[in-house]
Image 1 (cartoon, rainbow over the protein chains, first blue to last red):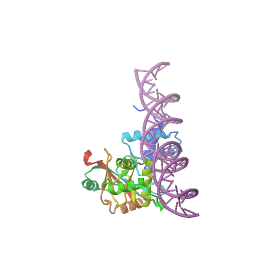
Image 2: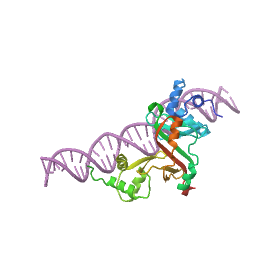
Image 3: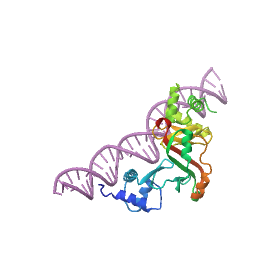
Image 4: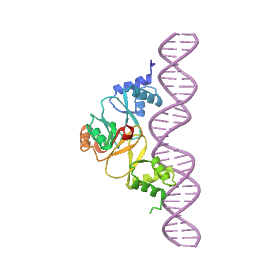
Amino acid sequence: MPRPSHVRDAVQGQLRGSNRHVWTVEEMLAELRAAGVAADFSSVFRSLVWCEEQGSVKRVDVGDGRARFEPAGDHHEHARCERCGTVAEVPGCVLADIPERVGSLTGFAINAHRLVFIGLCPDCQ
Amino acid sequence: MPRPSHVRDAVQGQLRGSNRHVWTVEEMLAELRAAGVAADFSSVFRSLVWCEEQGSVKRVDVGDGRARFEPAGDHHEHARCERCGTVAEVPGCVLADIPERVGSLTGFAINAHRLVFIGLCPDCQ
DNA sequence: CGAGTAAACGCAACAGAGTTGCGCAAGGTG
DNA sequence: CACCTTGCGCAACTCTGTTGCGTTTACTCG
């Protein structure tokens, strides 16, 4: 039985309560500290990995070399601003029947995909 | 005027002549050495970056944390085998009009995308 | 033909992000 | 109350990619 963990609790609180939908470890750490929670990078990282293993969090790679985490939920794609790095959520799966077509083109058995759109966010345009 | 560079020449020869279409630096290095070319990791890396700057090579990120390089050509997507790491090319752009739809959903001005399908290659199925 | 200059190369060091080992602290349990 | 396990912070380590530097080597200009 897990013992109380103020770091993990705070991480889960952020995941649940914030209006942000993706976090790097650094971002999560900064928000926790802004909320008065004392925490270390590695503890936040381990909490996020723990949540990932529980299935409540998914790891997202938008191709900028930093790991991001988001609450698990409906599958969706992401758009990353190439100027400021903001990551927006693209609701719904825009790919529809494409994986089957890709499968028949390549012989691969496709079971996942990673799609990130790159451009300029509204603020950076 | 560039001086003769046996490493760069060999790299370009591989890019042109091999039936492989994406290389990590390690893979390129291994093939060069198998072909009897003496070269160092950093020299191969610099040659690939040089080709990238010339526009003859594009850098590809398939989300496994390793940089790959491919000869520049028609835009296409990639499929990566999650077991053995093989990367296959998906000919053509399967996305068609999706970027505009994404733009209107998110407000982003989309000018690129990164799409990788993940699954099992024919050998690994 | 020789001196000078700039490019190419290999070696090794550095950088950034993620990951892990370890010792201490602290909550739960018998 | 003693013990045991887990959480935490610190620091070290990994893995790629990247870069600095000294040496070699090929051009070029006198």
